[in-house]
Amino acid sequence: MAGKTLFDKIWDSHVIETIEDGPSVLYIDRHLIHEVTSPQAFTGLEKRGLKVGRPKQTVATPDHNVPTIDQDKEIKDELSRFQVDTLTKNCKNHGIDLYGLNSDYQGIVHVIGPQLGVTQPGMTIVCGDSHTSTHGAFGCVAFGIGTSEVEMVMATQCILQPKAKKMRINVEGDLKPGVTAKDIILYIISKLTAGGGTGYFVEYAGSAIRNLSMQGRMTICNMSIEMGARGGLIAPDQKTFDFVKGKKYAPKGADYDKALEKWKQLYTDEDAVFDREVTYDAADIEPMITFGTNPGMGVKITGSIPSLSEIEQSETKSFQKSLGYMGFKDGDSMLGKQVDYVFIGSCTNGRIEDLRAVADFVKGKQKAEHVTAWIVPGSKEVERQANSEGITAILEDAGFKLRQPGCSACLAMNDDKIPKGKYAVSTSNRNFEGRQGPGARTMLASPLTAAAVAVEGKIVDPRVYLA
Image (cartoon, rainbow, N blue to C red; front, side, top):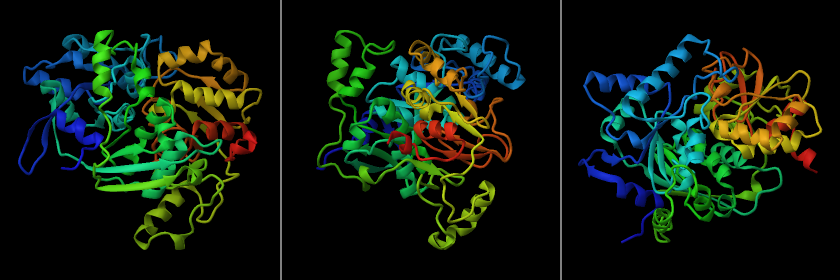
């Protein structure tokens, strides 16, 4: 009998029942909720006279639609205020831990989960948000769910879910200077395409993945969904265990030791079989940038947009439409393209490590006069760290402004929108048409690349400065 993959081990240990030729009833260890996808679920429960079944396994925070300035004042936007107030009321009624605006740990749900130790190896984790895959960095089966499923988990602590196929993506070797976790995942998606992971749960492996920090691993897993995968995960190791230890929700004392012994069994057996396996050489990865309207449309920053003759015939229409939206031409070089906005933040790259990278780069420099640069920490904890480490002062000296925690311009649900026709280099996860505001043109990149672009005011290879 073949061994098990990490995904198999976690999934199989959480199956309550398997329906013949159908989905499994999967037990959920942690349910994360926010202000946008939870109100309808709470209303559904109340209509049926139900309470949240296991409220202590649910954690809430407002993040998607919150303002990133003047958070201490009443929210001006009526919808945002209603959503945040409704979340507060619902959490109080159902006994759910809430990290509300201006609390010590409020922030983007996928940033605060790991910071609080809510996220632990071997768990099943769901949230009404597609980037729940972030938590897979800790060796979790974590995935986004729809609003009706949010209600299902609230009521039963279980979900009906078909088991995905399994893919392993190996990245072997050492990364070159100036190449980051964000470049790895943009490179992978450019190779596999935005649909290449459809139907799979991906395990990331190889020496380049193991060498990443926990924050880098979160960036990788976060964007699994952008190649169509159900989620992504990385086997936990000593870095993982050290990160979790001592956190608010983490087990303590003898309970931690007991948990640690279980966590050490979370790896893929040597004889386990994957449905698909691919391997990439870390030395081939360079700083990446997207040129189109899905995250798979990416190239090395020194490269050019593919020519029409390189595109499969079935894809030419959408390729041309994408370039028309972006105002680019096939064969164009990406270097030197003018940029109006830089956004550094989101659940992909709004952690302290990301802000440190930006501060290290811009120290002693000034952002280009015509560039508007928004730096949005992923949580209050990141904001505090940025202040105490002097990062905030460095950024302000360089002409940047640190805003308050939230999803911000990643999805432009609040006032942080890129104006129509303007170009933005963003450290977020999606470059869809209108994602950052109606008519906004988004190019995805790493925090290091975004910092270099902010200084130059145009697309530039950050390695020029590193040399």
